[in-house]
Amino acid sequence: MHKKRVLLAGVAAGLGATSASAEMRLAVTDLETVVVTPTRTAQTVDQSLSSVSVIDRDEIDRQQPRQVSDLLQGRAGTSLTTNGPFGKDTSLFMRGTESDHTLLLVDGVRMGSATTGGASWQYLPPSEIERIEVVRGPRSSIYGADAIGGVVQVFTREGEEGPPRVNVFTGGGSFNTYEYGAGVAGGTEDTRYSLSAGHFHTDGINVQDDVGDDDDDGYTHTTASGKVSHWFTPSVEVFGNFLYAEGESDFDAEDCDFDVFPVQCQPYSSAHNEFTQVALRGGGRVSITDYWQTEISFSQSRDESDTYYENELDGYFDTRRDMASWHNEFYLGRDLDFVAGVDWRQDHVDGLSSMWSPGNDEFEEDSRYNIGAYQVLTAELGSHQLQGSLRYDDNEEFGGYTTGQLAWGWQVTDTWQTRASYGTAFKAPTFNQLYAPEYQTAWGTYRSNPNLNPEESASAELGVRWQDRQMYLDASVFQTEIDDLIANREVETDQNQFVNVNEALIRGAEAEIGAEWEDWQLSGAYTYLDHEDRETGNELRRRPNHSARLDIDRELGDFSFGATGIARGRSYDDEDNDVRLSGYGLLNLRTSYAFTPEWSLRGTLENALDKDYEMADGYNQPGRAVYVSIHFEQE
Image (cartoon, rainbow, N blue to C red):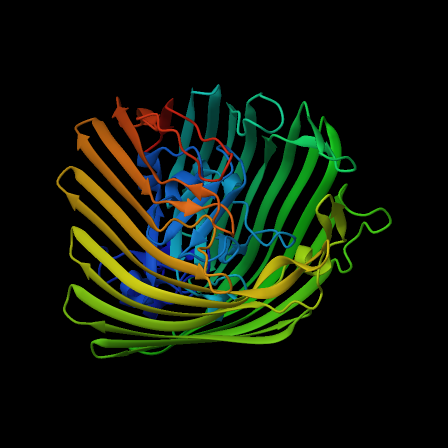
């Protein structure tokens, strides 16, 4: 068992290791990708019966991204919108669902703001990431609220058995951009460790031409991450990990006098957000028998943001989530696995905004708890596989909620598999929607609503996967119906409130391909979406009807060359479909040269064709840009 547990130590570190029987089952081949996010236990992609994409460290090194959005943009079923580059607000739309319908995990820690409901994708540091697992489709029956569209889990860098290995990098380029970082990782037979840190700065571009000043809107962040695990005996392990990020992001803003008409606005000479993102987790795993492994973990995440105008604090919103989890894996036989556990979470918020009415400047409620119990049963019946999951959540605000999912897979041949699934999911209302103080603008008074119901969804999917030693193809069609979508509506003259009104219908198809042939590596993805707000018949905002991505890389001795092409169809920026965002295509080029086994020089030419494009109306994106970096990675 001691040797076998090493096989899955890397992928299991985020959500739980596997017992001896599971490791033996997965050790049959090293050609299949192992994932843990779909069911909270280690499985191959085929066994998960899910639509999954994996981005590993080798691919991250080849892509040389400035932001995590560079890695995710255009992937199957995935599109992102940014209000400008470099640390600006980023929304991720998974299979056409809302931007807060995708759950973000960092090494098993639930991230995101309890006030806005969304995750701060823009602050994730690519230099600290070991791998990313993207699971498309509902996962509330396993993770609870927020996983209507899917789950993205980020794993930070990990150590392996061996002497300490150091990595160092530094680089810079367009827009007065520079970055640097260092890390060390290693381990013994019983202990693994990793520690790294980095810093990134850019002057950026002027994000909005007609708002605020004409200066560039820069971005700076400093990050650190660490991970350690130790086996006291072959069956007892303790672990801990953290990710810390802090920084500052400039934006354009104006000071407007709404008491006169027409409204008078003056640009602020400076405006910026200061942010802090934290993920902490620790716990232990025990293999009680060869057929039962249990894990207990405690974690905390923090999402903090302070807004300054002309260096004066205008408001802040701080979220803290305290969490605990008891996770169990039972191996009941060669073809029968059972997972069960309990999650507890307590959300805390604290905030202040200059927009809030005087004397009404606190949340009506500043904390709430959620307790969830889940179970997943997987059975193999010859060439068929069945999987069912069920979860019950008890929330302090809206009471009990049950979600479930059923999936079936058929291994038609050694290389072909078909799958089908149906699942329900929900999204809990945010603190802003439920409890935020009212505020007034020239367009009326805006209020929260403590009587909101959760948003609900039902999704169905049919998929097929073909895979051999050098190539794979995965394709699926899906449909999602969402009820009780929360929107801000005028309920009386000049009186606006969050209410459950909208229904959405989303249909789509997606395909993903990957291949390795001699010195060539290729991956591609395509997504088609047909989506509408069933109340108005309009398309949902900022979701492209078509999107595609193609990555090609070639190694020539010590040199490597690559290109990424991204195509995005048209979309609409507003709910009324009056503001059309044109489609566009981008080409990014990259190269690297390894002048020793440990030293390499890398360079990218982003937006090589110097395209002018927008992801959100009125927000600029950078033109052609060049970046160069040098890396040392100890073998």
